[in-house]
Image 1 (spheres, rainbow, N blue to C red):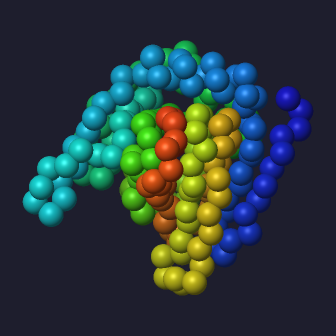
Image 2 (cartoon, helix red, strand yellow; image 1 turned 120 degrees about the vertical axis):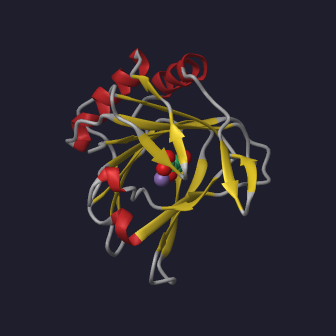
Length: 197
Ligand SMILES: O=C(O)CCC(=O)C(=O)O
Ligand SMILES: [Mn+2]
């Protein structure tokens, strides 16, 4: 595809670009099916207030061998890239201008699955990381809020086949979340490609 529809969010201290329908509907459907069956999805636990709870989603970590990653206090086991992930990685690297060496994969089974407020600011990601986030399946709301100026917040819908790029100082100044919803909704898979130092 020569032209992709690009939507720059105008946010202070951030660089966020949304490409809707970056992958076609047909491609996205095929990719979704492959991701469901070919990824080693896992129910991870998180320690909170002295309790051990299930994370409200399934996760998996893929990337280059030798890269390790701690996420929310969890040591992720890394799997080697597979074919479908490599083909997605190739496509998004062309617009992100980064060679990604890792990806965190999240499977939201229904509206009760979510990801709470955080920044992708682990030190392994370096100062101003480029995060390329691709979504397949159900549309979910993605919220952003400024860390110090509480009046600054916004939300976008991450649709099937969309690509969201977060770069520049975004992770330093902003947090993001996928809120729960009471609506009866289907499954969604999100992949966040990263470069780990
Ligand atoms: O599911 C999403 O769109 C967000 C995922 C995310 O923030 C992350 O993997 O760090
Ligand atoms: Mn994140």
